[in-house]
Image 1: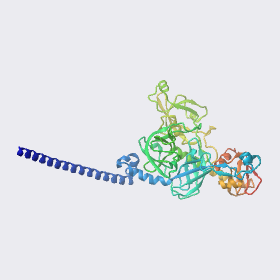
Image 2 (image 1 turned 180 degrees about the vertical axis):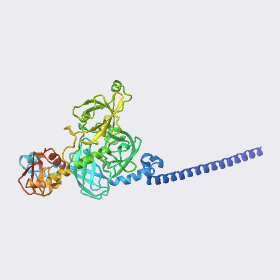
Image 3 (image 1 turned 90 degrees about the vertical axis):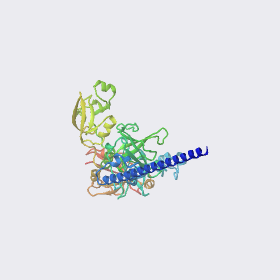
Image 4 (image 1 turned 120 degrees about the vertical axis):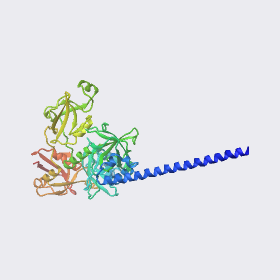
Length: 509
């Protein structure tokens, strides 16, 4: 019996040793395999990175970041590029104060107006906080219109903690884009990408200042393109947002949406949320429309609108059935105005526009976004479907007056014509002058209209143009550009330390 028990124990021990031996051997083999795979991954990464640097695979990070394991290399490099170009924006306004107002306790600030007393004004702690993106080394910054709307002082804090008071160059509520400028040079400026080339599923990063947390970076993928969320209430609004699942919150507005090359592909603008905080999806203005708006604001101070003279709508199953369409991609032309750009290009009711300049358009928002990149006078290519046949035509875009040329005078030409340069008033200057608005003349040339046609001097504060209040340089440019050649311009204002108002009149040439 004892021998049988010992034999059984011996067999069990031998089996255990054999099992452990094979387990160790298998584990070693698996470990060797893992090490080999890691070496191969490192080798692939180095080869791919080398190829990217030498230009052999120029879109490797944007196209497939997962190829480098979890993609962290692309995120890190993109953040290093984008972070220094994103700024914090605090937009403030001046509000009435009864301090030092002898009539304030009895009548409030309105009493100051009744008795001819100009009450001092103080800045609110903050009307709005958001983000912006430096788009040129000489101080131009793009943000959202809704970030600075209603403000009369805008403070910009850079990535390196320097703070500047910004000038509003121009703002466009139809695209929710605004352009600022600060007095600085040699700034880190972001590079533009191409929002048309973005693919659904592609990695992107949102860079901004949510909840005043400076230089915050989040990542996600492009969830959809050409998204209309009905957030912009302007009649001529262009909504073809890039939708992402990168976390965006209050304070991110105006910040950068970048690809994994660190290129700007959108301006973060809105979030879909039931609570006021991020709930899964965010929306950005495509950079290709933002670039056009920026250029218009720099050149004219306002956005040049191109009009086609047609009404369009998305294709419905009923329209598709009626016109015997194979699919519902494109936009349906339901009306063509006589004398408009569409009529001159040969478009008719029931045509289906499928492409603009070779880019396919599947919906009205996409169509508006593509056309919104152009000015009156530009010529674009339109592909449309009529009676089952594809037709290509060229269309010369027009302005609201149905003429094929931009509206108004470029700001540089206007500055040259008037021979003047201006500066917006600081809150302290407004307080000392006892005014809520105005811009200051900082320079006059010998041959400009303001020198040759008037006796104006440097330091004059322009309060009104043709009885229209002037709050900014943008307001001044817009008011002057409305005046036809030969018509008169009346400038109403004051000089510092002088009690009486001055009027200057001249005719536009």
